[in-house]
Image 1 (cartoon, protein in one colour):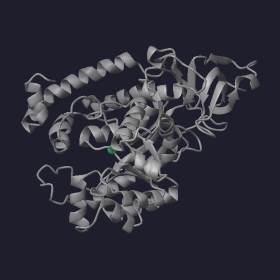
Image 2 (cartoon, rainbow, N blue to C red; image 1 turned 90 degrees about the horizontal axis):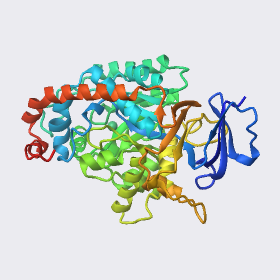
Image 3 (cartoon, helix red, strand yellow; image 1 turned 60 degrees about the vertical axis):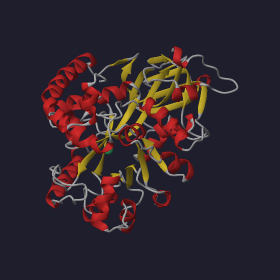
Image 4 (cartoon, rainbow, N blue to C red; image 1 turned 90 degrees about the vertical axis):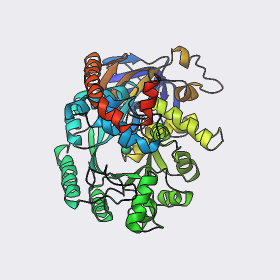
Length: 477
Ligand SMILES: [Zn+2]
Protein backbone atom coordinates (compact mmCIF):
# COMPACT_ATOMS: atom_id res chain seq x y z
CA UNK A 1 0.00 0.00 0.00
CA UNK A 2 1.25 3.47 -0.86
CA UNK A 3 2.51 5.18 2.30
CA UNK A 4 2.52 8.75 1.06
CA UNK A 5 2.19 10.85 -2.07
CA UNK A 6 3.33 14.34 -3.00
CA UNK A 7 0.74 15.72 -5.39
CA UNK A 8 0.22 18.63 -7.80
CA UNK A 9 3.92 19.42 -7.92
CA UNK A 10 6.61 20.22 -10.44
CA UNK A 11 8.40 16.90 -10.78
CA UNK A 12 12.02 17.14 -11.80
CA UNK A 13 12.58 13.43 -12.38
CA UNK A 14 16.06 13.58 -13.98
CA UNK A 15 14.93 10.63 -16.06
CA UNK A 16 14.46 10.33 -19.81
CA UNK A 17 14.81 13.31 -22.11
CA UNK A 18 16.15 16.55 -20.70
CA UNK A 19 15.43 16.80 -17.00
CA UNK A 20 12.25 14.75 -17.28
CA UNK A 21 10.04 17.59 -16.06
CA UNK A 22 6.40 16.75 -15.32
CA UNK A 23 4.02 19.63 -14.74
CA UNK A 24 1.32 18.94 -12.15
CA UNK A 25 2.91 15.66 -11.20
CA UNK A 26 2.58 13.17 -8.37
CA UNK A 27 5.20 11.09 -6.65
CA UNK A 28 4.06 8.08 -4.61
CA UNK A 29 6.16 6.02 -2.22
CA UNK A 30 5.66 2.59 -0.71
CA UNK A 31 8.08 0.91 1.72
CA UNK A 32 10.74 3.45 0.86
CA UNK A 33 10.50 2.83 -2.89
CA UNK A 34 9.11 5.11 -5.55
CA UNK A 35 6.02 3.40 -6.97
CA UNK A 36 4.68 6.24 -9.09
CA UNK A 37 6.22 9.34 -10.70
CA UNK A 38 3.90 10.81 -13.30
CA UNK A 39 0.99 13.12 -14.02
CA UNK A 40 -1.40 13.75 -11.13
CA UNK A 41 -4.47 13.04 -13.21
CA UNK A 42 -3.42 9.41 -13.69
CA UNK A 43 -3.01 8.77 -9.99
CA UNK A 44 -5.76 8.03 -7.49
CA UNK A 45 -5.08 9.40 -4.01
CA UNK A 46 -7.99 7.52 -2.39
CA UNK A 47 -6.60 5.20 0.31
CA UNK A 48 -3.28 7.06 0.46
CA UNK A 49 -2.79 7.76 4.19
CA UNK A 50 -0.58 10.83 3.79
CA UNK A 51 -1.08 13.25 0.92
CA UNK A 52 1.33 16.19 0.75
CA UNK A 53 0.37 19.24 -1.25
CA UNK A 54 3.28 19.89 -3.58
CA UNK A 55 1.85 22.91 -5.36
CA UNK A 56 4.29 25.80 -5.82
CA UNK A 57 7.07 23.33 -5.11
CA UNK A 58 9.65 21.49 -7.16
CA UNK A 59 9.95 17.85 -6.13
CA UNK A 60 13.29 16.43 -7.16
CA UNK A 61 15.90 13.79 -6.27
CA UNK A 62 17.95 14.43 -3.14
CA UNK A 63 21.36 15.89 -3.90
CA UNK A 64 24.49 13.74 -3.85
CA UNK A 65 27.71 15.04 -2.31
CA UNK A 66 30.48 12.94 -3.85
CA UNK A 67 33.42 14.16 -1.78
CA UNK A 68 33.01 15.14 1.82
CA UNK A 69 35.22 15.31 4.92
CA UNK A 70 32.99 16.35 7.79
CA UNK A 71 35.40 16.00 10.69
CA UNK A 72 36.97 19.49 10.61
CA UNK A 73 33.74 21.44 10.41
CA UNK A 74 34.28 23.17 13.77
CA UNK A 75 37.15 24.97 12.00
CA UNK A 76 34.77 26.62 9.54
CA UNK A 77 36.00 30.12 8.73
CA UNK A 78 39.42 29.28 10.19
CA UNK A 79 41.60 28.99 7.07
CA UNK A 80 40.91 30.93 3.88
CA UNK A 81 42.23 33.94 1.95
CA UNK A 82 45.77 32.66 2.43
CA UNK A 83 48.48 31.27 0.12
CA UNK A 84 48.01 27.59 -0.73
CA UNK A 85 51.44 26.73 0.69
CA UNK A 86 50.32 28.04 4.11
CA UNK A 87 46.86 26.49 4.17
CA UNK A 88 47.70 23.14 5.75
CA UNK A 89 50.75 23.82 7.88
CA UNK A 90 50.05 27.37 9.05
CA UNK A 91 46.28 27.54 8.69
CA UNK A 92 44.33 24.35 9.38
CA UNK A 93 47.18 22.44 11.06
CA UNK A 94 47.72 24.59 14.19
CA UNK A 95 43.96 24.76 14.77
CA UNK A 96 43.29 21.11 13.96
CA UNK A 97 45.85 19.97 16.54
CA UNK A 98 43.40 21.17 19.21
CA UNK A 99 40.38 19.29 17.84
CA UNK A 100 39.71 16.11 19.83
CA UNK A 101 37.62 13.10 18.77
CA UNK A 102 34.44 14.39 20.38
CA UNK A 103 34.90 17.80 18.73
CA UNK A 104 35.24 16.20 15.34
CA UNK A 105 32.11 14.16 15.95
CA UNK A 106 30.15 17.33 16.72
CA UNK A 107 31.69 18.90 13.61
CA UNK A 108 30.45 15.95 11.56
CA UNK A 109 26.94 16.30 12.94
CA UNK A 110 26.97 19.97 12.09
CA UNK A 111 28.15 19.34 8.53
CA UNK A 112 25.60 16.61 7.88
CA UNK A 113 22.79 18.71 9.36
CA UNK A 114 23.84 21.63 7.16
CA UNK A 115 23.93 19.49 4.04
CA UNK A 116 20.69 17.74 4.89
CA UNK A 117 18.69 20.90 5.43
CA UNK A 118 19.93 22.22 2.09
CA UNK A 119 18.80 19.09 0.26
CA UNK A 120 21.70 16.63 0.34
CA UNK A 121 20.56 13.07 1.00
CA UNK A 122 23.76 11.15 0.18
CA UNK A 123 27.25 11.97 1.43
CA UNK A 124 30.47 10.26 0.34
CA UNK A 125 32.09 10.61 3.76
CA UNK A 126 35.84 10.22 3.65
CA UNK A 127 37.73 10.00 6.91
CA UNK A 128 39.56 8.09 9.58
CA UNK A 129 37.47 5.72 11.69
CA UNK A 130 34.49 6.37 9.48
CA UNK A 131 32.50 3.60 11.21
CA UNK A 132 32.20 5.88 14.24
CA UNK A 133 30.61 8.56 12.06
CA UNK A 134 28.20 6.10 10.49
CA UNK A 135 27.08 4.88 13.91
CA UNK A 136 26.91 8.26 15.64
CA UNK A 137 25.85 10.61 12.86
CA UNK A 138 24.51 9.05 9.67
CA UNK A 139 22.33 6.27 11.04
CA UNK A 140 20.79 8.37 13.86
CA UNK A 141 20.13 11.21 11.38
CA UNK A 142 18.63 8.78 8.83
CA UNK A 143 21.02 9.86 6.08
CA UNK A 144 22.54 7.83 3.23
CA UNK A 145 26.33 7.52 3.35
CA UNK A 146 29.12 6.07 1.27
CA UNK A 147 31.53 5.24 4.08
CA UNK A 148 35.11 5.61 2.90
CA UNK A 149 37.99 4.83 5.25
CA UNK A 150 41.13 6.88 4.65
CA UNK A 151 44.17 4.72 3.99
CA UNK A 152 47.70 6.08 3.86
CA UNK A 153 51.17 4.77 4.57
CA UNK A 154 53.06 7.87 5.61
CA UNK A 155 54.14 9.13 8.99
CA UNK A 156 51.88 11.96 10.17
CA UNK A 157 54.92 13.89 11.33
CA UNK A 158 56.05 15.54 8.10
CA UNK A 159 56.61 19.05 9.43
CA UNK A 160 60.41 18.70 9.42
CA UNK A 161 60.48 17.66 5.75
CA UNK A 162 61.40 20.06 2.98
CA UNK A 163 58.95 19.98 0.05
CA UNK A 164 61.51 18.05 -1.99
CA UNK A 165 62.14 15.41 0.72
CA UNK A 166 60.27 12.17 0.06
CA UNK A 167 57.74 11.04 2.65
CA UNK A 168 58.71 7.88 4.44
CA UNK A 169 56.32 4.98 3.94
CA UNK A 170 55.31 2.66 6.74
CA UNK A 171 53.57 -0.27 5.02
CA UNK A 172 52.22 -1.61 8.32
CA UNK A 173 50.22 1.61 8.80
CA UNK A 174 48.61 1.09 5.39
CA UNK A 175 47.76 -2.52 6.24
CA UNK A 176 46.10 -1.54 9.51
CA UNK A 177 43.94 1.07 7.74
CA UNK A 178 43.09 -1.38 4.96
CA UNK A 179 41.91 -3.95 7.51
CA UNK A 180 39.81 -1.25 9.15
CA UNK A 181 38.28 -0.51 5.75
CA UNK A 182 37.58 -4.21 5.23
CA UNK A 183 35.71 -4.41 8.52
CA UNK A 184 33.33 -1.68 7.33
CA UNK A 185 31.91 -3.99 4.70
CA UNK A 186 31.03 -6.61 7.31
CA UNK A 187 29.86 -4.18 9.98
CA UNK A 188 27.34 -2.45 7.73
CA UNK A 189 26.32 -5.34 5.52
CA UNK A 190 22.58 -5.24 4.95
CA UNK A 191 22.30 -1.66 6.23
CA UNK A 192 20.14 0.02 3.62
CA UNK A 193 21.61 3.49 4.06
CA UNK A 194 25.26 2.49 4.02
CA UNK A 195 27.59 1.45 1.21
CA UNK A 196 31.33 1.16 1.70
CA UNK A 197 34.33 2.14 -0.35
CA UNK A 198 38.11 2.17 -0.08
CA UNK A 199 39.85 5.53 0.43
CA UNK A 200 43.56 5.38 -0.40
CA UNK A 201 44.39 9.02 0.23
CA UNK A 202 46.62 9.96 -2.71
CA UNK A 203 49.40 8.54 -4.84
CA UNK A 204 52.06 10.46 -2.90
CA UNK A 205 50.80 8.91 0.34
CA UNK A 206 50.25 5.28 -0.71
CA UNK A 207 52.56 2.95 -2.63
CA UNK A 208 51.56 1.67 -6.06
CA UNK A 209 51.74 -1.85 -4.60
CA UNK A 210 49.15 -1.12 -1.94
CA UNK A 211 46.99 0.73 -4.47
CA UNK A 212 47.02 -2.31 -6.75
CA UNK A 213 45.97 -4.51 -3.86
CA UNK A 214 43.12 -2.12 -2.99
CA UNK A 215 42.04 -2.00 -6.64
CA UNK A 216 41.77 -5.81 -6.70
CA UNK A 217 39.73 -5.81 -3.49
CA UNK A 218 37.47 -3.04 -4.80
CA UNK A 219 36.85 -4.92 -8.04
CA UNK A 220 36.14 -8.22 -6.33
CA UNK A 221 33.64 -6.55 -4.01
CA UNK A 222 32.06 -4.50 -6.82
CA UNK A 223 32.97 -1.46 -4.75
CA UNK A 224 35.15 1.54 -5.58
CA UNK A 225 38.46 3.15 -4.81
CA UNK A 226 38.18 6.85 -4.05
CA UNK A 227 41.54 8.60 -4.49
CA UNK A 228 42.65 12.24 -4.39
CA UNK A 229 44.32 12.66 -7.78
CA UNK A 230 46.86 15.23 -8.97
CA UNK A 231 46.41 17.80 -6.23
CA UNK A 232 49.19 20.13 -7.29
CA UNK A 233 52.84 21.03 -6.79
CA UNK A 234 53.59 19.17 -3.58
CA UNK A 235 52.15 15.91 -4.89
CA UNK A 236 53.96 16.34 -8.21
CA UNK A 237 57.34 16.74 -6.45
CA UNK A 238 56.76 13.54 -4.50
CA UNK A 239 55.73 11.61 -7.61
CA UNK A 240 58.75 12.83 -9.57
CA UNK A 241 61.08 12.00 -6.70
CA UNK A 242 59.63 8.53 -6.38
CA UNK A 243 58.89 7.56 -9.98
CA UNK A 244 61.21 9.77 -12.09
CA UNK A 245 61.37 13.26 -13.55
CA UNK A 246 58.84 12.61 -16.31
CA UNK A 247 56.31 10.93 -14.06
CA UNK A 248 52.95 12.44 -13.17
CA UNK A 249 50.18 11.05 -10.99
CA UNK A 250 48.10 10.02 -13.98
CA UNK A 251 51.03 8.49 -15.87
CA UNK A 252 51.93 6.34 -12.85
CA UNK A 253 48.31 5.30 -12.32
CA UNK A 254 48.07 4.36 -15.99
CA UNK A 255 51.29 2.33 -15.94
CA UNK A 256 50.13 0.34 -12.94
CA UNK A 257 46.68 -0.40 -14.34
CA UNK A 258 45.06 1.88 -11.78
CA UNK A 259 42.81 3.80 -14.16
CA UNK A 260 39.43 2.15 -14.57
CA UNK A 261 35.79 2.40 -13.68
CA UNK A 262 36.62 1.25 -10.14
CA UNK A 263 38.36 4.61 -9.60
CA UNK A 264 36.76 7.78 -8.27
CA UNK A 265 39.29 10.56 -8.80
CA UNK A 266 38.87 13.63 -6.62
CA UNK A 267 40.00 17.08 -7.76
CA UNK A 268 42.45 16.29 -10.64
CA UNK A 269 43.47 19.93 -11.06
CA UNK A 270 47.12 19.11 -11.83
CA UNK A 271 46.31 17.13 -14.96
CA UNK A 272 46.64 18.07 -18.63
CA UNK A 273 44.08 17.51 -21.36
CA UNK A 274 45.59 14.28 -22.65
CA UNK A 275 45.77 12.84 -19.15
CA UNK A 276 42.10 13.62 -18.62
CA UNK A 277 41.36 12.02 -21.97
CA UNK A 278 42.98 8.79 -20.83
CA UNK A 279 41.01 8.99 -17.59
CA UNK A 280 37.74 9.46 -19.45
CA UNK A 281 38.61 6.61 -21.85
CA UNK A 282 39.21 4.37 -18.85
CA UNK A 283 35.82 5.43 -17.43
CA UNK A 284 37.32 6.98 -14.31
CA UNK A 285 34.66 8.91 -12.41
CA UNK A 286 35.52 12.38 -11.14
CA UNK A 287 34.50 13.95 -7.83
CA UNK A 288 34.93 17.68 -8.28
CA UNK A 289 35.03 20.19 -5.41
CA UNK A 290 34.83 23.52 -7.14
CA UNK A 291 34.54 25.82 -4.12
CA UNK A 292 37.22 24.03 -2.18
CA UNK A 293 39.92 23.93 -4.84
CA UNK A 294 39.28 27.45 -6.05
CA UNK A 295 39.31 28.80 -2.47
CA UNK A 296 42.40 26.88 -1.34
CA UNK A 297 44.45 26.71 -4.54
CA UNK A 298 43.09 29.53 -6.68
CA UNK A 299 42.50 27.00 -9.46
CA UNK A 300 39.31 26.01 -11.28
CA UNK A 301 39.22 22.19 -11.29
CA UNK A 302 38.75 20.75 -14.80
CA UNK A 303 35.16 19.58 -14.40
CA UNK A 304 33.64 21.18 -17.48
CA UNK A 305 36.39 19.85 -19.74
CA UNK A 306 35.97 16.35 -18.30
CA UNK A 307 32.21 16.25 -18.59
CA UNK A 308 31.38 18.48 -21.55
CA UNK A 309 34.37 17.89 -23.86
CA UNK A 310 35.32 14.33 -22.96
CA UNK A 311 31.95 12.89 -21.94
CA UNK A 312 33.33 11.77 -18.57
CA UNK A 313 31.18 10.90 -15.56
CA UNK A 314 31.39 13.29 -12.61
CA UNK A 315 29.70 14.59 -9.51
CA UNK A 316 30.10 17.58 -7.20
CA UNK A 317 31.50 17.62 -3.67
CA UNK A 318 32.02 20.13 -0.90
CA UNK A 319 35.26 18.74 0.57
CA UNK A 320 35.89 20.21 4.05
CA UNK A 321 34.61 23.35 5.74
CA UNK A 322 37.84 25.26 6.48
CA UNK A 323 38.53 26.85 3.11
CA UNK A 324 35.36 26.63 1.04
CA UNK A 325 33.24 27.29 4.11
CA UNK A 326 30.10 25.28 3.43
CA UNK A 327 28.49 21.94 2.65
CA UNK A 328 25.61 23.30 0.64
CA UNK A 329 25.12 21.64 -2.73
CA UNK A 330 22.92 24.44 -4.08
CA UNK A 331 25.84 26.82 -3.63
CA UNK A 332 28.11 24.21 -5.14
CA UNK A 333 25.98 23.94 -8.29
CA UNK A 334 26.08 27.70 -8.78
CA UNK A 335 29.80 27.91 -8.07
CA UNK A 336 30.58 25.08 -10.50
CA UNK A 337 28.58 26.75 -13.23
CA UNK A 338 30.06 30.22 -12.70
CA UNK A 339 33.63 28.97 -12.53
CA UNK A 340 33.22 26.91 -15.71
CA UNK A 341 31.88 29.94 -17.59
CA UNK A 342 34.76 32.12 -16.42
CA UNK A 343 37.50 29.52 -16.88
CA UNK A 344 36.39 28.81 -20.46
CA UNK A 345 35.29 32.40 -21.16
CA UNK A 346 32.07 30.87 -22.41
CA UNK A 347 28.65 31.47 -20.80
CA UNK A 348 27.24 28.27 -22.32
CA UNK A 349 29.50 26.13 -20.11
CA UNK A 350 27.93 24.08 -17.29
CA UNK A 351 24.38 25.22 -17.82
CA UNK A 352 21.77 25.07 -15.08
CA UNK A 353 20.45 21.74 -16.39
CA UNK A 354 23.98 20.31 -16.47
CA UNK A 355 24.63 21.47 -12.89
CA UNK A 356 21.38 19.84 -11.71
CA UNK A 357 22.38 16.64 -13.45
CA UNK A 358 25.84 16.64 -11.79
CA UNK A 359 24.31 17.17 -8.35
CA UNK A 360 21.76 14.35 -8.73
CA UNK A 361 22.05 11.48 -11.22
CA UNK A 362 25.67 12.39 -12.11
CA UNK A 363 26.66 12.16 -8.45
CA UNK A 364 24.80 8.87 -8.13
CA UNK A 365 26.65 7.47 -11.17
CA UNK A 366 29.94 8.68 -9.74
CA UNK A 367 29.29 6.72 -6.55
CA UNK A 368 27.80 3.77 -8.49
CA UNK A 369 24.48 4.24 -6.74
CA UNK A 370 22.49 5.16 -9.85
CA UNK A 371 20.55 1.89 -9.78
CA UNK A 372 18.94 2.99 -6.51
CA UNK A 373 19.06 6.82 -6.32
CA UNK A 374 19.72 9.98 -8.38
CA UNK A 375 16.41 10.18 -10.24
CA UNK A 376 12.71 9.87 -9.49
CA UNK A 377 12.01 6.56 -11.15
CA UNK A 378 9.70 3.72 -10.21
CA UNK A 379 11.71 1.09 -8.35
CA UNK A 380 14.34 3.48 -7.00
CA UNK A 381 14.64 4.37 -3.34
CA UNK A 382 12.71 7.49 -2.36
CA UNK A 383 15.49 10.01 -1.70
CA UNK A 384 13.47 13.10 -2.49
CA UNK A 385 13.41 16.79 -1.64
CA UNK A 386 10.86 19.52 -2.16
CA UNK A 387 11.83 23.13 -2.84
CA UNK A 388 9.37 25.91 -2.03
CA UNK A 389 9.26 28.33 -4.95
CA UNK A 390 7.39 31.00 -2.98
CA UNK A 391 10.49 32.86 -1.89
CA UNK A 392 11.31 36.30 -3.29
CA UNK A 393 14.60 35.01 -4.71
CA UNK A 394 12.83 32.18 -6.61
CA UNK A 395 9.89 34.25 -7.72
CA UNK A 396 8.24 34.66 -10.18
CA UNK A 397 7.59 31.21 -11.57
CA UNK A 398 6.54 30.84 -15.19
CA UNK A 399 6.00 27.68 -17.19
CA UNK A 400 5.71 28.95 -20.76
CA UNK A 401 7.58 28.99 -23.09
CA UNK A 402 10.01 27.42 -20.61
CA UNK A 403 10.24 26.58 -16.90
CA UNK A 404 12.30 29.35 -15.34
CA UNK A 405 12.62 27.43 -12.07
CA UNK A 406 15.38 25.36 -13.70
CA UNK A 407 17.88 28.25 -13.90
CA UNK A 408 16.45 29.75 -10.72
CA UNK A 409 17.19 26.57 -8.72
CA UNK A 410 20.85 26.79 -9.71
CA UNK A 411 21.53 30.52 -9.88
CA UNK A 412 19.11 31.97 -7.32
CA UNK A 413 18.30 29.34 -4.71
CA UNK A 414 20.29 29.39 -1.47
CA UNK A 415 19.27 25.91 -0.29
CA UNK A 416 17.16 27.41 2.49
CA UNK A 417 14.09 26.93 0.28
CA UNK A 418 14.28 23.13 0.71
CA UNK A 419 11.42 22.35 3.08
CA UNK A 420 10.95 18.57 2.97
CA UNK A 421 13.56 15.83 2.76
CA UNK A 422 12.83 12.12 2.45
CA UNK A 423 15.52 9.45 2.57
CA UNK A 424 14.52 5.85 1.83
CA UNK A 425 10.98 7.20 2.05
CA UNK A 426 11.47 8.42 5.62
CA UNK A 427 10.62 12.05 6.19
CA UNK A 428 13.75 13.43 7.87
CA UNK A 429 12.82 17.08 7.34
CA UNK A 430 9.24 18.30 7.43
CA UNK A 431 8.20 21.87 6.65
CA UNK A 432 11.71 23.16 7.22
CA UNK A 433 12.40 21.31 10.48
CA UNK A 434 14.83 18.42 10.85
CA UNK A 435 13.01 15.68 12.71
CA UNK A 436 15.91 13.56 13.93
CA UNK A 437 18.36 16.32 14.86
CA UNK A 438 18.10 18.78 17.74
CA UNK A 439 19.57 21.62 15.72
CA UNK A 440 19.62 24.33 18.38
CA UNK A 441 21.38 22.05 20.87
CA UNK A 442 23.83 21.02 18.16
CA UNK A 443 24.67 24.61 17.19
CA UNK A 444 25.08 25.57 20.86
CA UNK A 445 27.44 22.68 21.46
CA UNK A 446 29.43 23.49 18.32
CA UNK A 447 29.83 27.10 19.47
CA UNK A 448 31.01 26.05 22.87
CA UNK A 449 33.54 23.58 21.55
CA UNK A 450 34.84 25.91 18.86
CA UNK A 451 35.40 28.68 21.41
CA UNK A 452 37.61 26.33 23.38
CA UNK A 453 39.46 25.01 20.31
CA UNK A 454 40.27 28.43 18.90
CA UNK A 455 41.25 29.80 22.31
CA UNK A 456 43.58 26.93 23.12
CA UNK A 457 45.09 27.03 19.61
CA UNK A 458 45.74 30.78 19.62
CA UNK A 459 49.41 30.81 20.55
CA UNK A 460 50.28 27.91 18.19
CA UNK A 461 48.32 29.55 15.42
CA UNK A 462 50.08 32.89 15.92
CA UNK A 463 53.47 31.20 16.10
CA UNK A 464 52.77 29.44 12.78
CA UNK A 465 52.57 32.96 11.36
CA UNK A 466 50.26 32.63 8.38
CA UNK A 467 49.28 35.69 6.38
CA UNK A 468 45.94 35.57 8.21
CA UNK A 469 47.70 36.63 11.44
CA UNK A 470 48.51 40.02 9.92
CA UNK A 471 44.92 40.46 8.77
CA UNK A 472 43.68 39.67 12.26
CA UNK A 473 46.08 42.21 13.76
CA UNK A 474 44.79 44.81 11.29
CA UNK A 475 41.25 44.11 12.43
CA UNK A 476 40.10 42.71 9.08
CA UNK A 477 38.93 39.43 10.56
ZN1 LIG B 1 39.37 15.31 0.01
